[in-house]
Image (cartoon, rainbow, N blue to C red):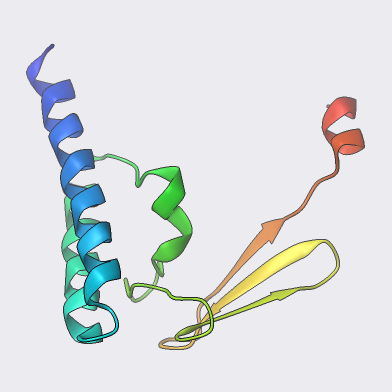
Amino acid sequence: MNKKNHTKDLATQRIEKLFKEAEKQYKQNPELSHRYMEIAWKLKLKTRTTIPKKYKHRICRKCQSYLVPGQNQKTRIHRSKIIKTCKECGHTKRIHLTSNKEKAKD
């Protein structure tokens, strides 16, 4: 394994640990979980890695807060889109829902 891949692998592991800790700490100390997300985001940018898929929608891309649906994130469905709104900064994320028929056409 070369040095670049090793660094990215370590960064991904560290990002996963930060997300798990943010989840644990959110109820007692939301500011600390926000700080964990800031660290994870800076690590992502510095090492040019991606956030794992299972955690991708748990961070606000604008203010880097840890998102918990119903607490600091509003989620709604409108015209085959899931719209997630951060209550901290107001940033919205739209996720398009596609049917199997539309995928088969492509």
